[in-house]
Length: 455
Image 1: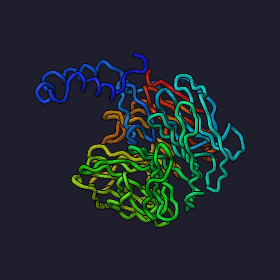
Image 2 (image 1 turned 45 degrees about the horizontal axis):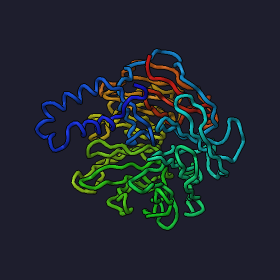
Image 3 (image 1 turned 30 degrees about the vertical axis):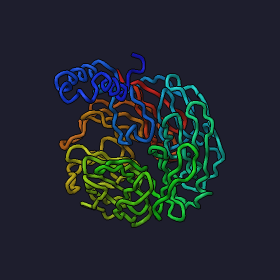
Image 4 (image 1 turned 90 degrees about the horizontal axis):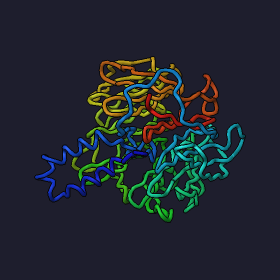
């Protein structure tokens, strides 16, 4: 069936076949059977159009991905050279978007936004611009490109913000956020990917005059609102629902706050001031009425969300003696997951841990998924009741996380480590991969690769 049919397309088909007015009586007897048939006969083809996927939750909703892969090196569909960078690829409408620090091995002050064909890896368009870095870890841009309704939104490490025509690469508008907002620049630059809400695109800026978070008109690029007189963090914002309200959750350098995405009004804020420096990198994760964040220096916090209205409160906070002697979980680059009544995440030196959701007590620790190192990283995808893990050694691990431990189904090599992102311990693969249409796309400092997730 080619690229397959998206789940959204199936929903639209069902809504036309079974109008809402008839569903209450007809749906239980007939529509469920039709849905089940569709789910078993259609190969879903999902895009990965923004940071951590469609809903920014790392969930892969496609069917047909096997329980395990062949051990050893994976067979690649294609590979194409790119420059260094920390930004993970995104995928939309048969195209891949990624940013880098200029051609391979080039010593340059150029950032690039690249668009490639998902089938072949061939370059469709690129845009490059001057970006002199005054930040640490200069290998390249951090934030993933966000693609929405024919527009591609990209932000560079120094705050160069662009809206492109996603098909042609034509610039629709651009902003130099550092110049416009006098950013109190984080040590590692701007990292949070833009998020789209209705007619707005919202960006963590860290600017002066209460411009930590800024919303821009998606079409014109004009500022629509600004919010929070706080320092920028590195974490990407997410959208949740409380009562009848959409809420934009932003983990800044000083708090976890819920904002009205239409106006920037602060609904609630839970302080999380750093004891050393703002270093929250992992994305906030949500399950039901619980929201969890975890930081390298500052440990973990579980927040309870009011289901009826935009309100929140801290349930528990746990901090170890240091980033080496940790309590509960001190995440760095890796985003944890919530599954059942447990938290699974990667501690400061690569320790994969299971915690009790209710209080943060440790259930187990696994030291086999990634070698123990400062900032050792595991990116986790959830697919049904199982997981796909990608570690900073370039390995793809299929398995299942449970309170009893991590059961490994297969372990395969996808990508080589490279040294521009981290010029020690043989290099790393820190960028978050994308999974779309049964294919995984991953990058290092030299190349972007595509591999089919089947035996």
